[in-house]
Length: 175
Image (spheres, rainbow, N blue to C red):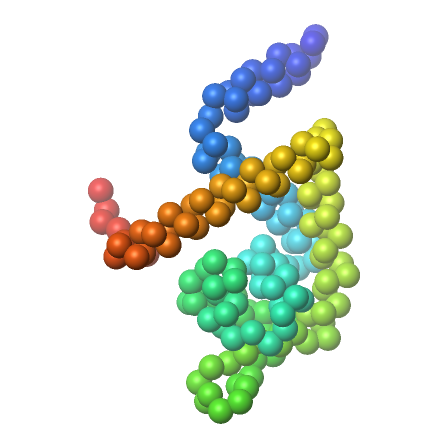
């Protein structure tokens, strides 16, 4: 404690214990994203591209709309990311079937090859984040987060049934 580390750590834990769950989850997600982004940068991949790569590694050939829905991002955001991924040679986009407008994203050989380099980085971040939790604590954490997510998804669905939608950030008035 001569260097003040223990006292600082104890105080930080106290502050986090007093925080609302929503803020703790946001801080944890931000920390996960930043930790992974530091690693992805060394491979020339952004966090946004990582999101779409993960989805395509599981379900190659999705449309832009399907990708944006699975990523929980807007279609314009997906369009911009996919355009850049195509420029980098990670994906190709082409029309499938009779629909002349809808393009589907397909991983290139380069996009598939990224999987072997990037997934270990995500595993490393997860392992780092869970350091100090035993298996039962991790199980409880997973269950608790799953319940929270389901509850909030149900709330959004119920609100939509009542005509309420999450507004686009641009449409919010400046206060």
